[in-house]
Length: 360
Length: 135
Image (cartoon, rainbow over all chains, first blue to last red; front, top):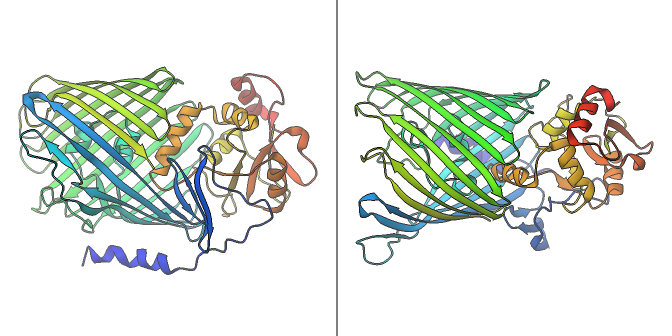
């Protein structure tokens, strides 16, 4: 019932009357042409227009796009693996200006190769990663209903390979909280002098559409995120989240995040999280700090330090990630980075990782 | 360069608000209607100047920003082929906002932000606009 409840408002949005596409005058605004149109055709649905990295526009209301990543890992202990790490499709529909329907679908286990395994393993499965409806009343007040990325920190809101500078997520993003929330969220922004102040208030009270059986989500939860984005090139945020697990335990999580661009070619970012659970050994904390420098046009050097102290383990892990990223065109990203850990355990996986990601 | 709106749009805008509009963070006018920001073609020199002066972003940073927005199904502002087309469209749509050379402004549109026509570093231009050089 909790999983079925997510579909009702989304289906209602699909059958709502679409806005008329009648142009105001002869010169009708067209799709941004940062990339040349690779394919175009006039159809009964409207103009079909495909641009690399910007998807296929369907008339004035639809967008089909996605991204893919192929990667390889050469880890300590002799582990070797590779394959298609991501093949995701993005679909959005804006029938009227105040409605935005969006979904992200992922094809998992499309092709995997691992040392010691014969041939390429393929067991494709299509899963829904995100599915939500936005009701947009104003800049300051919007309602999102469905399954969406949990607004804790910064990294989780852009945690897909084509958007990242490294091939792996920081441990505090990967290990601590559910990366998606299923429920409802109020969000919005105000624009006082000097920047933008944005907020998110959300509650998770539905089951994910495609839950991970190995990592069942919390039974219910609630959280908030507040962010100040200065026109001077820096952004700070604060997050809080509390959740009740299925076994009745409660967890509390708080954090801060930062993005700073001291120079056009330099970006510094970081997050810190602290959590406490109802279990006796349920305290955890972690942080990361990352710097990205554009050395020459399209070539970037990346360095990241992480520290993660999980609950009940007794020893924190320190990781250092040093890498290169080449972005020859905005929709293509090639990365290689090497992770060094202060010790080996199930959390630290030192070694070399490489990937090629494309937005389509 | 002049940022223009429909004659009936009495809103006053700061350069910072124009930035938020063109980054599609600010989506609504004060009366609740949806803002329609208009760009020039990517190869237009005036668009490059607008990005430098107003958005204060390199092409690389802007491309990265729009990649992140694409990830949520949000695309950059729509484009029109010429500054004349931008002026005519803004004159006919009360929700539109665009930018044209100051010399092309006529009585069919209203200027909400007036930037230096020639030269000036981006910082000088933005500072002048912030001090009321837009009026």
